[in-house]
Amino acid sequence: MKLTKKHLGIYNTYEGKKSSLESVGTQKEKELFQNGEFDKITELIQIEYKIKKKEISESEIQKHKSELSLIFDNNWNKRSLKYLSKKYCEPEKEQSPFDSIMSMLWAMFG
Image (cartoon, rainbow, N blue to C red; front, side, top):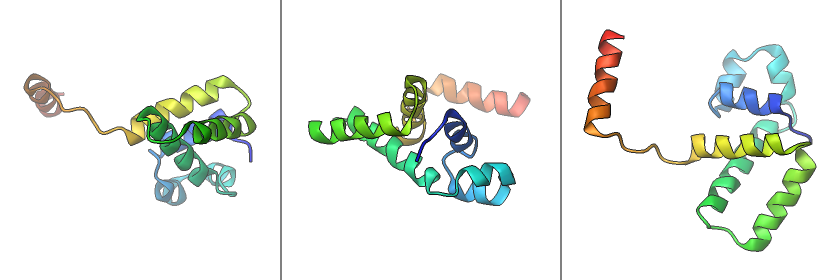
């Protein structure tokens, strides 16, 4: 299985939710995800998060890097995977009271 930047972009468009892709995705988008690609991307970003948190062994990290080399053609896709990992696996940072008030005002008055 090869994954492309297009796969990662579609994954991000549907915010990592396979059900969203299945319900509102175009036929062309759905065709790209016929062989378990969506689940594979989810698995890869979870492993990236575990690496960042230092929760897996060095041998597992090396195995993951080898797999990435087989799946992706270039380093740009690997960086995109790290971005998706940060976006979908890390907990949201707590907002300061000022930021919370500003967000509320922005939502009310646009």
